Image 1: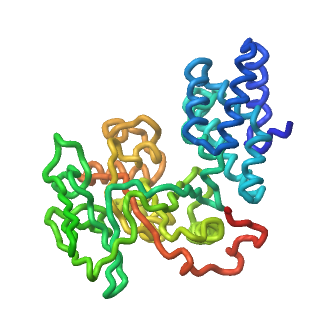
Image 2: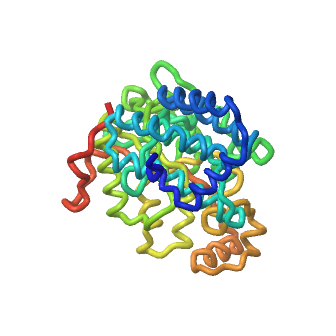
Length: 363
């Protein structure tokens, strides 16, 4: 079996084979492979994740990889039946290798895999890597409604009701709440708290929007593209443009792209240079606040599992790490932030950034 579709290396494959030979699963292994195959063929992400998580909890971090390898041909058939280009398939499934490497970096080089809920989306072809970025079609999911102003075609975000906000307008828990949002949907108008899409915060005061002028274009159930940013090459403007162009080909009917990341935090203006790829990426998006406990920037810039105290005590080796530390000392608060893009068809791209004509749209 050609196992390179997941990008695993020789030593990783050998460790999995050694694990299988040293463990007696009996007929249960065959049944698990059959169950996982059926789940993937149905593109059932939830059940696929459940199967892999059950074996992870029972047999450890090598067994999910063993099962994934067993169903490789099934995964390939799902991508083929969905009309997905082989290059896109391989780029998407290489995320398995990325997280195996991530596991090794956190466990002194040990080979294993524990991101079963995340990678189940890839196995079922419910998320695609298109160039530098990954895209996942699903409901918007955030507690906001987006309206279009018919007067000037601008978009307005209104927060849903009963959201607890701190004094700066970020989402927080009840214990730290300075105010709560309200939302009223009446016959002729809606009343609620607007979102400042530059800062990514919720206004304390309510505003009335007459429905004769403002039309609803998206709510929590609206199908959008969720954008994910895998570890990899620099997030250059041309690479982002190319990915968005590919997304328009694969998902032509979806115009909203949504992302939640530390890379959307407006506070990045304080710690990045004017020409930074990170800053330019952040400024593409209209912002809204999302719930988070620890700012994602801590784990992505310093390491997983670190809090503010550990970040401040960290032996910084990069200029970004030092600037983040100094910003924290100066009182800056970082936030994982949500944001959206619209009108993918209006993006302009150079010829060299136009995706191959061999790409086929999803049915």
